[in-house]
Image (cartoon, rainbow, N blue to C red; front, side):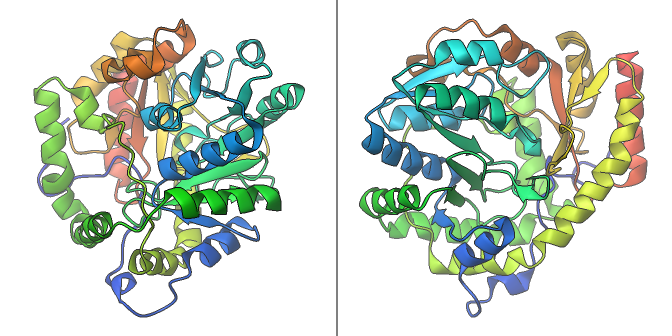
Length: 404
């Protein structure tokens, strides 16, 4: 599929377009208050990343219960596995239900016992996950439930934000997650006692680190410069295509991570940038949802392609479409034409967790066929407002031709 790669790059996700006035040093810097109002809760704890939020939550829960095992989906962000290892806890992988982002319910029940600290259902790609099953299993063994809503800020169930049904939930403010402070995290808890425990742990293990704050502040300013189709070809597209030419899909999607998780406070200036951006977020999310509802019907008409959608009563966020092809060969044929073409087609996570070589010491060997199949047959398509109708139709036609 031909495209002008240098001057019309579409981002792989629908990030809130930045505004220069967000960078002004004055104004309301109360990010926690703005986030709490948006989520409909009394209190939000701000951390430097979604991963840091998970580290704080797991550390506090471990101190409260003494348990050690954390159950996560076998297909999820590698940072989740690294966060569990960082806390010195035991990682347990649960396979997915076939063709789904949800846990296999029977496998989840078998994995959980009296040493289970937490179960982590994941609202993958903005889709709304099954939290009720995790809560039922957790209740049987006395475990916590932490909702991973890193990619789902704005997703709701019956009008209520995701992340609030479990004991705790966290959201990411990283680049590409919608609103960004160039890394940042929001942590919520249902009970006041748990909120107090999270705050104590954060004060103890999360220091102010000038070097990290300076780095992230410069990156945030740079993001405001390059996050536009005319410059993303240089900042994102060229490194992507270089990684694809080198045969390095992990570098292409950016899911190669260090086990040394940065923990530091989120500075006042970056918080004020995020707080101001929150004023534009509801309208942006509504526009993305309207676009997704219009466009997803196109994929529903293509035989051999399934779009991962939400259950009845749920309205997820739509940073991108998560599409599942009939097999790996068909998916790879689509990627050969579209990934690297500058049109917002990509992959989410390259492997199921056991198949990352750099995670072997953390994860080990596991038989998770459904998670492996999900990794092997899915691709993503941006729901950015910069992806115009003509380009979207061309992408859908290409996928339809290949699927046939």
